[in-house]
Amino acid sequence: MAYSSITKPSLHFNTVLYTGTDAAKSVTGVGFQPDFTWIKTRSHGGTNFPHILTDAVRGVNKTLFSNTNDQETTNYTNGYLSAFGTDGFTVTGQDAVSGIARTYVGWNWKAGGGAGSSNTDGSINTTSTSVNTTAGFSISKYTGNGTGGATVGHGLGAVPKMIIIKVLSTTNNWGVYHSGMGATNAMYLDQNSQVTSDGWLNNTAPTDQVFTLSNGNYGNTNGNTHVAYCFAEKKGFSNFGSYTGNGSTNGPFIYTGFKPAFVMIKVKSGNNNHWFLFDKHRLGYNNSDSGNNYLKTDTNEAESTNTNRINIFSNGFKCTTSNDGVNGNGDTYIYWAIADEPAVANVGTNGIPATAR
Image 1 (cartoon, rainbow, N blue to C red):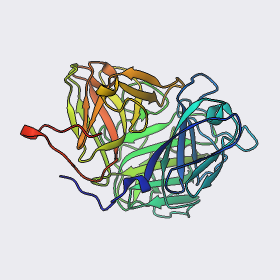
Image 2: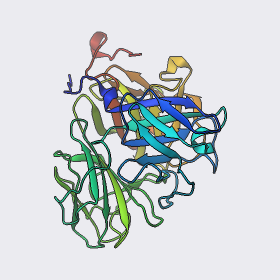
Image 3: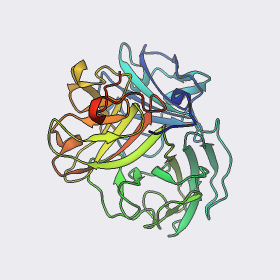
């Protein structure tokens, strides 16, 4: 049984749903002032409806898009978000965040509050690092030097299980490190490709103080600014791991130690497929609700509905499809889960997990 010092996970991560108005709108109900907000239109897809990623370290009016390799943009006078508030955020009237009668999801993380301060633990000093050590999350902004073996401090005081890096001042893919694929491999948040042997972390596992970079692409282009989102595992609050699919509707059960509020899954090897995002707030949390609703980080498509993928339990999740996006026979997958509840609640007879609603 897994326990956490975090008694209310929603004070560190929370999901909100809202409907656009074709005008600026204050979105509340987050429960804290976000430092990192990720928004996607649910009801619509296409060029005008990308994933919107904004954080307090870079500045609220500066935007990245997880489904493209585009550089950071401030195309609109006030960006897509205009403010972070004590209980949420304010969006502008752009279609991607507040089109009339369109529906949206916003995933929100709490870091250290505001822009943070410089971290000098690595050979590259960060311009700013904002850290929430309790929840194992930090945001760092730094300038690359193009030198293999350069290090950057993340401030967590724990080894990151997942690192997502994007160069801001030029186009390039989103580099992703996950402990389930090792430091000699990489994947890209904006692509549906399998794991590659691109050692952009200089083939070096991160430590509880720093992560290491190679001499170029993704995380260390000389003279360019980058952002790094780092996540450490906190027992009972977050869980990172891998599993092997069996190609059956009676798929593998993945133990997380808590009832998940958010799950990200990506196939690592065996086939090319998307990064799938699930959360508890969108209709279709379990199969009995007529399927899951999910989004994909690497496309601008609308939310997919009524398609069985996973079932949520009080202590993990179970694959309920033969679809190779999450459960191809013999394919390997990485996942990231965040807690809705801080500890295991129910276990059925013979150790079979009981469905948690």
